[in-house]
Amino acid sequence: MALLYRCYHFILKCIVLIIGVPNPKLHRGPHALANAVHALDLSEGSHVLLVTDKTLITLPVINQQIELVTTLGLQPIIFTDVHANPSIDNVEQGFACYRQHNCKGIIAIGGGSVIDCAKLIGAKAVKPHKAVSEFKGLFKVLKHLPPNIAIPTTAGTGAETTVAAVVNDPKAQLKYAATDFTLVPHHAVLLPELTASLPAHLTATTAIDALTHAIEALLSINSLAFSRQRALQACDIIFTHLPNAYSNGADLHAREQLLLASFYAGQAFTRTSVGYVHAISHQLSANYGTAHGLSNAVLLLPVLRWYGRRIDESLAMIARECRLTSLDYPIAKQAEDLLLHIEQLLSSMNIQTHFTELRNEDIDTLAREALNEAHPDYPVPFFMNLNECRSILHAVSVTA
Ligand SMILES: [Fe+2]
Image 1 (cartoon, protein in one colour):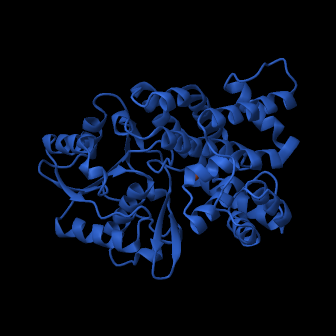
Image 2: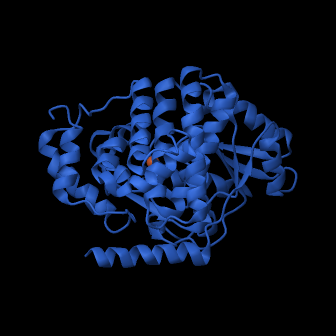
Image 3: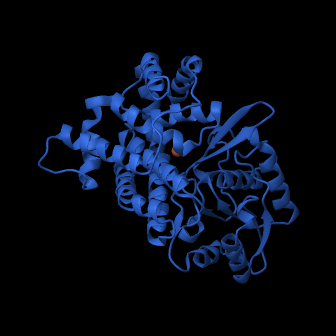
């Protein structure tokens, strides 16, 4: 079975190598949004669908960006009906609004859910006769989306640069992921002032989500020079700037750096996919509603420690690149220095080490579901068996 999985991973790697994943044009600095709007190249007065959510639209800082879009000559049509886990209906309603107002482009301002919903509204705009559920899987869009911009309001998911969009089908109780290179937003705009009001705990857990993307991308057997470089940059930025952003949310330099790290980590993992931390974490979120960043933060060290000495080279490389160790130390000690640094970072931000919601009787099912998700999709460096996955879940339950 392992050989079949590896063949599948090799095919995924070839697709990335041969076709090449596009990158959004990145806009930073004081004129970031203006530059992105100009780059859309839409005629004066064009309608653009502005996708956000009901909470964000109440914030003055979001309305300032919407006013700026108007000042720049576009007419934003505001669509806020996006749930925390966007549904098929949200996408359909957004598309109806797009069509009704004859929009020529899409601007998403929000977290991963808003950006994912906007990606799928764009997919519907170019494939109006396809049901949203038909975008499920690989390469079901295959058509350029209308000109679009993604503006993240959290620094973690990297949705502004990834090839995937997730949508919920509440009737069928299913979650679909559409994956297509055309879903990568055309422009990504990093505005640190949009993340300044995030509470410290959320700042911490979303940044650890980005750190997990970077580390899982580095561990992936499908990692290539570009994804490795981006993942290492993301780790370095997070270790350097997360403590400041956590302790002083108004530090806009630290906030901007975390947005950049999330973008880089997104560029890395969208080429390599993620690993067991995400596979297990998704089961916690699906079954108990545990926040994604938090479940990754709890699971990151137990999964890395399960790999043991087998991933020392990769962990040591991260430790050296991020100046967390001495070049004179043996590889095993360098790797351990990284793990200790992550442990201290998590503890300094009061991140829990166990899940109170995790029930002993659920562990077997959760472990099976996690491995079903990981195999064969995630090109992990070594395979985990069911007993090992159960042990990790037991270790992070409070009854451990
Ligand atoms: Fe994630």
